[in-house]
Image (cartoon, rainbow, N blue to C red; front, side):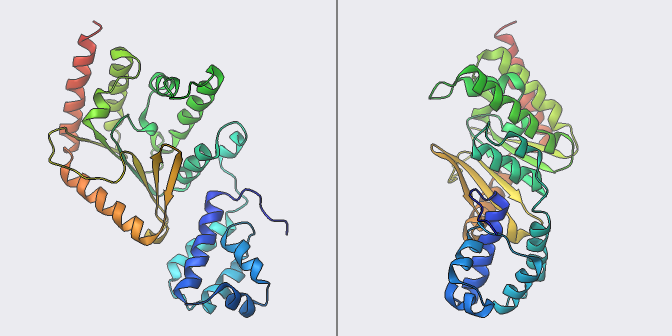
Amino acid sequence: MALRSNPTLRQRRLGAELRRMRERAGLGGSQLARALGINPAHVTQMESGKTGISVERLRTIAALCMCVNEPLIEALAEIITDRDKGGWWEEHRGTVSDDFLEVAEMEGHAHGLSTYTMAFIPGLLQTNAYTSAVFDRSLTPLPRHEVGLRTAFRMRRQDVVRSGATPYSAYIHEAALRMQFSGPKIQAEQLRSLIEDSERSTISIRVVLFDVDALPLNYENFTYVEGPIPDLDTVQADSSVGNVLFDAPAHIARFRSMLSRLDSAALPEDDSREFIRSIKKDMESKYA
């Protein structure tokens, strides 16, 4: 079987879980290879996602590693059997960056999504004009066609929450509600759209006010992605060099704690809607 040159996010996650399974059992890669009757390099390739495995081999590895977490084994088996079903984002491979594709892949397989943003409205809730304005103000100026490609891709991503298929909770800092990327009119239209989205039964929008006591968080913007089981949750955070992905148990526990803090600090949904409405009116007064 030819090695994958560019394994997908889910293929890499499967490999990472196989490595964790082996390490929890105290087995080295060479030890597992001998037990399986394969070359040690093959174990490395499986654990990096560069080569696939069958469900039967997954169960053999689980038995050798004394893994009795049946929900995890079943969830990994689902990743294996689903490997040939490419999502809509695959149509854009080669036209947008791998970071964009990985975010869409995570969202497309998510069982629930939660975001926190401090500088801008969450991408899954942005209007076309707002998104275009954000990309248009990139630190390194983008050509117009690139702005258009990125904007269209982000609009397509929104289907996952606008369709109601995936429950979505957005914690938005007051700073993001007031930050203008292209004047008060576009911001007011964005806030109007946000109010409409807040009335959807599968979307929860809650505001974190400026006057909330210190809320120390490790990242200004992050997305918590719920997997089919908690063991397969993932977090994506923004950084100056692109996406940062977290799936280690300790990291996931830390981000769950952050979400708990946000849940305690943010305004209730109804109060958040009214607060957004008040800022919208203020923006409208600036161009009326």
